[in-house]
Length: 147
Image 1 (cartoon, one colour):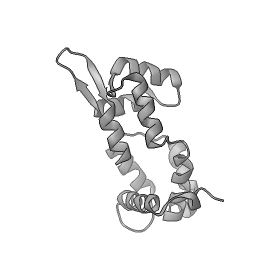
Image 2 (cartoon, one colour):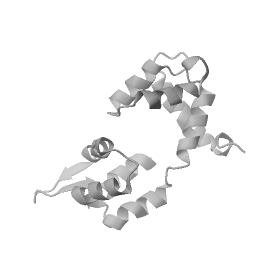
Image 3 (cartoon, rainbow, N blue to C red):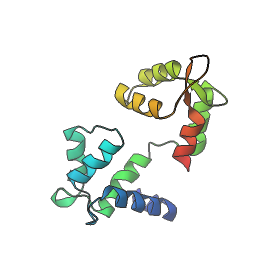
Image 4 (cartoon, rainbow, N blue to C red):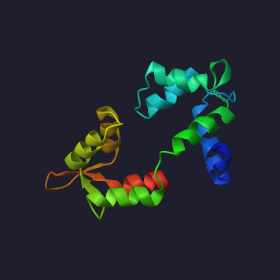
């Protein structure tokens, strides 16, 4: 059974919405221009290899919605569910306010994510306490990902 058929109708609807957001010219296909624009707006830099891999999934260098579902559903296998993510964040701190230095060092040791990507996410959910300590607002991050 393919991964796409294992998606719920709610997941497919959310993915359709995200596809439509990426398809900025509303032609029903995601082009290299669409990919670059959306990733730039998210502060993500894609290598030419990553772009080529995404575009080869579609025909004629474009990604249709079925191609998009196939690509994303493969990526969704590696995304932890809501409870797993919450438990992982609570390993650092029960209230999920995590010392940024500690979180950053841990993520770098784990590998698989660049320093630039780590900083991009951390900076979006950073809080500086009155003591000067910088913390990652894990609860807000978790709520953002699970809403």
